[in-house]
Image 1 (cartoon, rainbow, N blue to C red):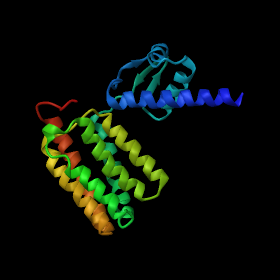
Image 2: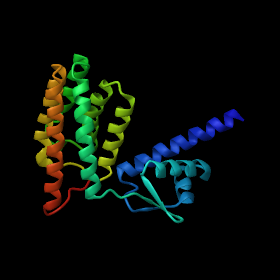
Image 3: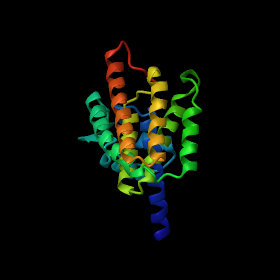
Image 4: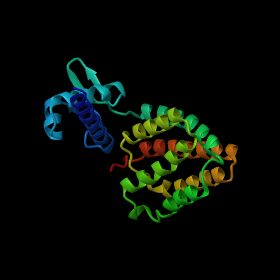
Length: 220
């Protein structure tokens, strides 16, 4: 029956979204073993939609299957550096395309969100990620390229899986870099927007390496 199939699809989609959010949020960290029955009980669902959701998570690389065992895919230092290399290329291109395409009011709203973060002591990791997403995904969406939007969104999600919430000394420089990107896009200067975006991601990469070399990796 079409109605039953649609309901099943909706349940599987909902299970996928919930499990993906749990992985990105850290409640299902990298390396943890997944059991279909327990997840179904936790989500209050039958095993069928959960099984479908897990299959999709495996296909998208969030979960790995080894024999009969399912585990959340860990994100290594090498992984995050590869991700940032791809982000540098993709998001630099996105910023160049977006230049001159963003409405002034939209840019003003994004700028207000960035400047509204006054102190790292007063900004939760969740808010920090939310504003960071707002900047980067607004730029991606301005390109009008659906594949590019999905790619940027996925790469950012995988960056978050690494578990590094925030590097305090990057708070003010990061804000300044975001504003420089937005200014170049607002002025319609594609070359400057691309350069500002690449500079921003280069600095993020260096900060992560520096944090990893330090006494401790910041956790949420």
